[in-house]
Length: 328
Image 1: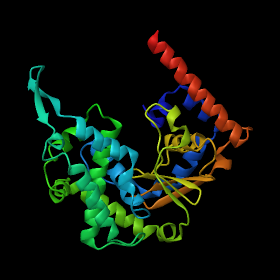
Image 2: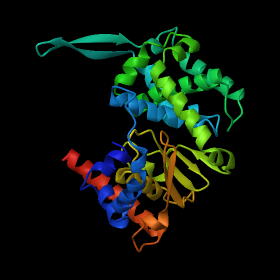
Image 3: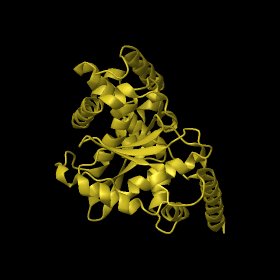
Image 4: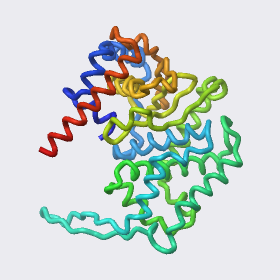
């Protein structure tokens, strides 16, 4: 589970609370989307939705690296590396036809004597790479590609960190553990890397004011209230009090779901640590930035501090009830 999953449960506490106190999100979404119709829908670059999701995660890490050198220290990436260090093998089902399935055992090369230091070598290599670049600047083509290859690898590690029990990302990365850093980066799918390079370039060209003018930048991390959400909740980026959600969607839309999630993050900042006053959806492929003032989204009469307290208490009560139901 995650904040996204919680908000998809139609009659769940989180969804009901957000819709009750921010009741105009759907109308705000429709109003935005009317003005986005002229953009049209872009052709699909990737055959599988899981690849599109990987691109979305990878570009998140690349954009963070425009502002900070320590994106590799993300708790989710580190969890992904820890999973690789302790998982010795993975049993993968194979379709043998006629409804029968066989399994194939994949050995984890990160857990061998040759591969056990690969994680630390990767981190050190990224640190050497970022030490050579200037933040908030356009990079030479080769360096940009290298940064994007790291971003794709971080996206795989992110997927592993969020689902340590196993997924296609774990299967993909396990076999790379005994490779050199250069070979691991070279093994990242060229089509995915090219897409991330393209998106990174578009972001730099179209949002110079955002990149150059940002004064206070907080890159993605869990919020205080993330502990109250099964699976946690970590945002993309906060720039000068504006909470950003970066989208790589082909169809230009600001969905109600995206607004719910941004509002959910705002609510999870229980003590107003990040002083979020606005939220924004940035459609990277279309170069469109849509900002919303929290005061315009809020339809409740409660003060922000009281609203966050009610959300916190409700989440904890809901979690306790669900835990008791499972035990019973």
